Image 1 (cartoon, rainbow, N blue to C red):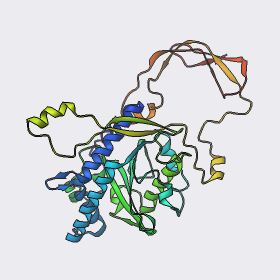
Image 2 (image 1 turned 60 degrees about the vertical axis):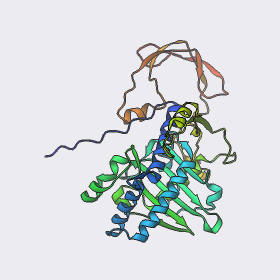
Image 3 (image 1 turned 30 degrees about the vertical axis):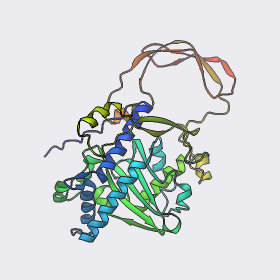
Image 4 (image 1 turned 90 degrees about the vertical axis):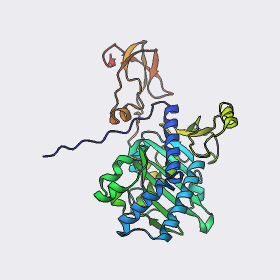
Length: 368
């Protein structure tokens, strides 16, 4: 019997909002380079397109097909450079997997220009979307060209680069040039005039089928929907973090004069939108499902608030990101922190004097 070596987990993004924003920005920049930065004359995205074409037809692409792919790579790279970037909360992955769009036999796209939060966008999922036996999805991106009847929507699903070769034929897996970063597109689809088209045999890439890829994107748009305008910098449901922009494109500095100016360059910033964890309620498009959704905490009508005295307690330093860190192979060592006196329970209700919580070090909360 041969032993199989498990894949190393993707390093977990730092648990803070700024750390997640930096992680999402690196994903965007690396994918922009993957589609647009030449390596030996052509971008690596061309090699992925060729591998996708071979899995679908069993033949090498023609010159006309290669020309179309090269133009598509340039379009994708340009879109990534101007994309709006979101960081989804950890619980959104499960909600997308359970969304009616993803679990329906058909999806009504509607007016995409009205539904899309941006013409070009990327969303990073710190906790990846898991669907059946497919590769986990750490992100999805979309690019829109044209308008009205001429609108073309391209959608990418993004997974771990190390997983791409696992289902490909051995010879193709050995020859395919993939990104050097942790993430890689494993599916590209196009929607135009109501027709969905794909670029590969999606099963060999562990990717969702074309309809599911579109449904995942629409589910994110639906869950993320806010009452404010799409181009608003801040909304009640999102925080905006400015991080240094990762950009390796452009000419390299040469000459003494250019060298002397490097220290005076201003660092370009990029706004990354952090969707707040408890905000994305069940999709409003299905009120019946929302009424029966019991995935979130719900307090009973007769529950009152209770007081907690000031003590110390051993707690995880990263409570909101604990699950993601553990799944990525990390460790959260409890730290002893002071807990101020406070009141727990549903807001706006009376305090029950008979119910108190005493926090004892090295033990969980004890009620008396």
